[in-house]
Length: 439
Image 1: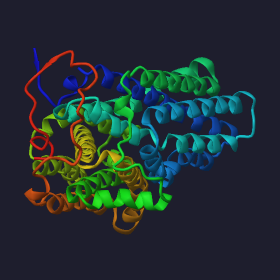
Image 2: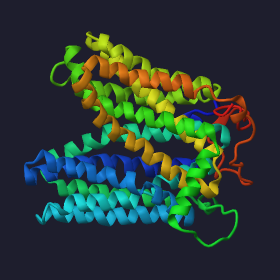
Image 3: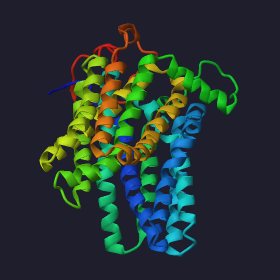
């Protein structure tokens, strides 16, 4: 049976990629479970929503601040050993959190350890993104990135659910921290299971000694600037994150107006998550369109529903519109990931990705801060229209790149070795890179 290239199913045909994805999956589920346990622990000990917020911030801020450093590290050392080291360090830190919970050590240690765990994770995702193109064929790269996004979305749903079950069954947050530690051990084992180490090698143009940290970060920025299409994609991803941050505030008001009641806010975010899962399947189909068309369609799925939400006084309509924003955001995320992998040299990929990822995460924080200011100054309707209008305006400008920016072979060459293991499903003839996402 033929499997269309560029889809999640085609990407899952590669055993090495399945192993990488399995490690990411168990880690993601554990991370979201641990987030619930961390906030619960801090709130139980302090009774303070402020301290609970500090604990959450401790999980995010280090990634934004130290993300560029993590990218530099991902380009300096062998990625296999680096990924395993990240997992083992986080395993030890999770056991430390379990000790804080079980032995009733000072609760201040909890956000500190959480911040250290996030800092230890900063090289991990640049490594995963750099390794992925070496485990699947070029035409199946969009499906591989869509599978990674699907794993993240599923972890967001399954992790808190598992955490809630553990807390209910044991009454102890320490158990959740121990389980999360075990997920890091499993992730390290899955990385070890990828037999061919060539996929993890860092390609260097020359065997030069490492230069200053800020110079290496500047090299990553220069690599992004050298590809205008990459800058536009990163900008689109940032904007989708900005919208998500604004939704954390604005959807409270939308739920009330749509008659969804007190729990409507959660329903709307569940709809965004469901839309995101659906979007992972749609992303593979989008990859077969010209980039400007795919990006315009994806951004429209984010911006137009936000423009329509002020009119959503019927609950099902509000849920559907929210779901479309989730689907569009995932499509943009997959396009950005695939575009960066295809345009950037392997030797500088980690440094460039170490700038792009924190930018997207910072967008969430920026949106959550901007939204209440807009609502306070201009009202809910204007805030929603401004949110959607910015996306539509960016879509109109960013999608007008020149064809010359997209034609030709990508900077990243296909390796002179085959992906580890042939796909277990038959795929159609491969098309040249540049004929799909970057056409």
